[in-house]
Length: 419
Image (cartoon, rainbow, N blue to C red):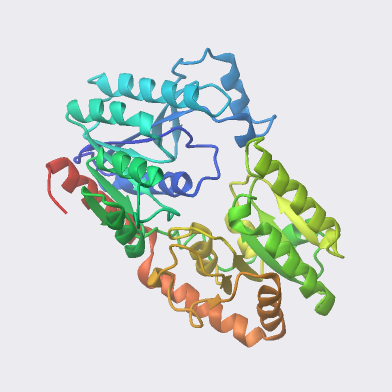
């Protein structure tokens, strides 16, 4: 049962909240019950998803019956009231403008006005006037930065992207991020507002080793995975940044040497019809077809049971170019999976040490294939990495510890305390 509400009013605001595969949104979704139990009065303000974020038979398709700009009936997600505005289905400036205007109207209502507003998701420079208006209402506006940017500091001349980032971040009352290197990158950009570091939290009861009755065997059988075969799993959107193409090429090499393996991608295709997205999808489809084992490469779309797929795996891999503190990797560690990663912008010792809690290898097909082969052949290596990874998460990233830190952070911000 939730504790009596004694803390400040916190509103988490993001254009997409549920259903979505976005890491930050899913993370805060899991924090909601704990934040309420800590005494915070929590609500969510969000928009309707775009069609690519839900399946046609989903109940959320009923959103289309509402006129754009209309507030939908309040719903409860994880026991927290969610206020949702009907937004245009296409991404772009009109959708962002409608969200900003609706959020401002919502916060002007004394019944809803929060003490602290936590913004999630991508915000653009056009949001700055709305952020300023929200702050003039006496609301402390925070922004969550969860992924390292390609732009960190101005080396010479004028960098327009860096300039825009700096304007947006300094328009808020503060930034919360999940690693110390990400905090330093923000300071290098010229952020002058408070920047707090709070590591991601993992639900250790949900993300754990498989137990009898979990249905792991049945899930594997759905993909034609036989007893004794090993599954390499990657979690995240299917996009160039995540390196899905490199993983298919690596798996193709591995399969020629070790045929008792499967590759499983858990995550939706990158939304949008932009040329570069379509080009990447065509490239990926071609690589799968030419892999020599297309029947052993599996794709799972948007799902809310990622933990089940992790428990059904034998090896986890992350081949991204940019991350903050990747949920997928720490959740895999919590499930006692041996983790393979390639170097990425944002990699830090928050994930433990390479060679101890995880393996770090070059971001190319041959190097990844060699590392996979090493793990496939050495059950002792897999077991050691799995055990050390789980212990690291237990010691540093439990959900309870993170929620407690967040709750105190929001109390301090509401009270006007400085970092």
